[in-house]
Structure formats: C-alpha cells, structure tokens
Length: 217
Image (cartoon, rainbow, N blue to C red; front, top):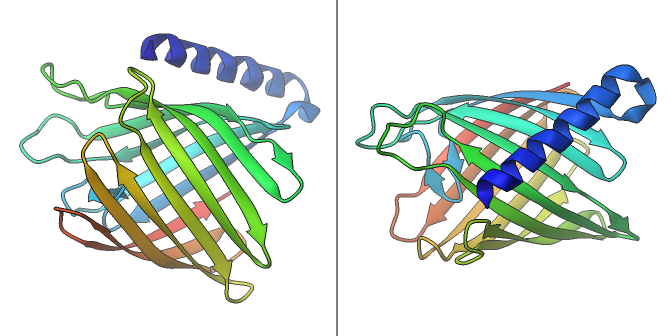
C-alpha cells in the first residue's frame, strides 16, 4: 500500500511541478535550509544528539501542496544509514478561522543497510484554529501500512512580539508506546531567517535541548 501511495504522491507532484514550469500562474515554490545541534523528531534524537543540516522544497497551488525534505541521521548500532528523505503531498483548505491539512508523508532512508526496513508512510489529518493572536491545533498521523498505532498531538503557538513567538505540543506515539512534549521560542532574525530554541521530553528517553536556525526563500 505504501508503495502505491508513494508513486501517486510523486506522480501528482511531478504533474504540478511540470505545469508550474509552463505558466507562472499555476503555483509557487519555496525553499528552506536549516542547521541544528540535534535533530529531534517526536521527542527522540535522530542523530544520536549530533548536529544536522537540513533542507526542503515546497510547491503550492491553491489548497494543494507537495514537497520534499531531507536531513542527515545517525542511529545507534547502524553505521550505514546516514540520510533521511521525506516526500509529502496533500491539501490544506480553510473554513473561516479553521485551517485543515490532509495529506500523505513517505519517510525514506536511501542509505539504510540491506537488513534494515526503516521506510514507512503516514496519513496526516490536522486542524488549527485562531484564538486571538494565538493558534491552537491538533494532528493525527496514521501509519499507511496497517492504519494502526498512530501518533497524535495537540499544539499551540502565541506571538509575544512581532519577532518573538512561543509554541509547544503534547503528543503520544502508540506504535512505540510513549508520550512526549516540547516547548520553545522562535525569533525572526530577518524576514527569511529564524532561530528556534526548544526543549523536549519523551517518556523512557533522555530529554533534549536544541537550537535550530532556518532560512526560507
């Protein structure tokens, strides 16, 4: 199933990307590059507490979006796997102050060892709602292979100034049977450059304090 969804996602992305190259009014691309002292995903380090360089490209046309994102990774006891590549596609409609996001994400590890099977896909459903200056939301990530043992979270963000905002999330990962939370602050250094400082904890695992600088253009 996940292979079928991946092929569909790539095909749709290629179709819209090709159309964008032929006409300027069919959508827009954006890019991002980031560096962090620790790549933390759902409360767990993906680089053995080491640094990571990351980057991605996004395409948007109306409510449709597609993109790709990558990072270096490092797993204990695995000397082969060094790269993560994520492909995603979806729609993000809005109704009043409610913003929705329905999509598919495929996580790939191109350099994984022959005996490893890290690749997997998830179906995403998310909603957020503006509350004054802030935003509160919730998200559900459901494994596409068997539609069981999801990751779900509630999240919120609030701008303290024009440049400084705070945000956090509380989640639970049923597949690995642990809960996690994070709290941090993001400061806009310039219009396209931001610095995020974040602390996270996951049950049964070490806590993480990490900083990420991101450039978007």
